[in-house]
Amino acid sequence: MESVGEFFRQVRETKGLTVDEVSSKTRIRSDFVKALEDGNFSKLPDQVFARGFVRSYARSLGLDEEDAIQRFAKSAGTFYEKQDERERLKVRQAEEERKRQSNRKAVAVAIGIAVLTLIFLLSREQSTVLKRAEPEPAFPKQSTQALQDVPGTAVPKEPEPAAESTKPNAPVATAPTSVPDARRSEPTPPPITASKPEAETVSAVSVGTDGPLSGISLEAAGAMADTQLVLDLEATELSWVVVQIDNGSPQESLLRPGEKAQWKGRDQFVLTLGNAGGVKAELNGKPQKPFGPSGKVAREILLKR
Image (cartoon, rainbow, N blue to C red; front, side, top):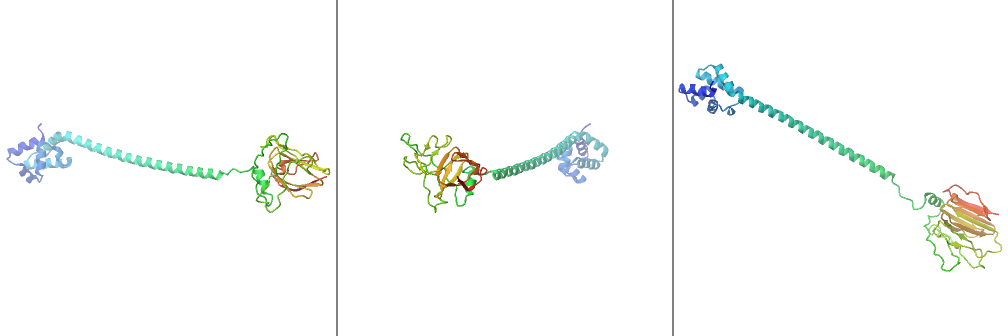
C-alpha cells in the first residue's frame, strides 16, 4: 500500500488541483499540506492535529476518511511511536533531574547541620577546658597558705644558696630569711653568724642532705656560761619560723624540708610557725609534741623550762 502522502498527491493531480487550492479549500496551511504529501511528519503538529488534517484533506478530495486514516496510521505510525518514546524519555529525564536536585539539597542541608553541630561541640569543649584550667602556684599550696595567714606578712622569696667557705673547717655564716616588704617598719633581727670560741650566744645550723645547702654546716664555737635552754627545729615541710629568745627581738627564718636550726637562750622561747605540722622541735634534747596540723599557722607557742 502506498503512503498516505503519495495517495493524496496522485488524487490531487488527477483532479487538477494545486497545493494552494487544497490549502484554501481545507483551511490547512500550504506548508502542512506539502509536508503531508512528502511524508515529512516532523513538520506537522501533534498526532491529533495531523489526523484532523488527513480527514479534511480526504474530505476535500471526496475520498473515504477512514481509509485515509488507516493509510496515515501505517505511514506515520513508526514516526509517532518514536516520538512518543522520545516524549516519555524527556519526561523520565526531567523527573530524574528533579530527584537529583532534591537529593543535592537534602545532602547540603545534612552537611550544614553536621558542621553547625561540630562547631557547637568544639566551642562547648573549649569553654569547659578553659574553666578547668588553673595557674600553677609559685609555692607549695600548704606553705603559701600558712604564710598568708600571718597578719602583715608577705610570701618570702626563695633564698639563694650560700657559697661554701674556701678555708678548710671554717664555719659558714647564714642569715635567716626575712620578709622585706611586710615588716619594713620593724627592726631587722640580727643574723645567725658564726664566731670565734669567745663569741657570745652562737647558734648552730645543720643543713639536711636534701636541701640546696647540702654539706654546709654552722657550728657554734662556744656558748655563754649562763645559757640554759637549747631549741632545735627540723623542717619536714617548707615552713616559715619566727623565734623570740627571752625578751629579745624576733628572728625569722624559712626552713626547707630536711633543714635544721638551733637557738640558745636562758629562760624561754616564743615561736610562730607558718606550717605547724611541718616542723619537729626538741627542747634541751627532749622532743616536743606536734604544734598543729600541716598547713596550719601556730602563733605564740611558749617553750620554757
